[in-house]
Image 1: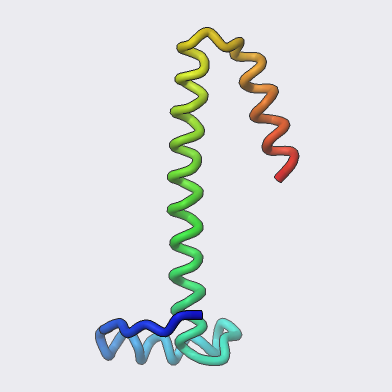
Image 2: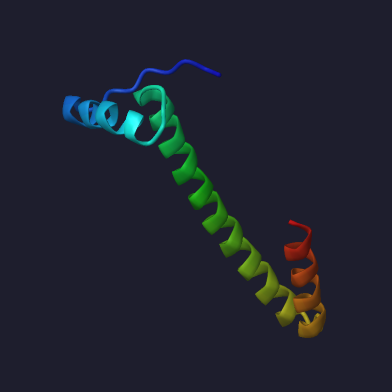
Length: 80
């Protein structure tokens, strides 16, 4: 892990301190890490899905059989 410094409003920190034990976290810092990680994964997934959709469209424009593209997508999804 890498230590960082971040400025946050005091009321947000107080709310995090209240929520952490209710959500099963040992403190507010692990909760912050969880929130950041969750948001980052959602954004990464959205970005990757966006890129994947663009790739599929480009393949279809270039004449790749749409059925082949769909089959490959199913195989990738099954392997996850």
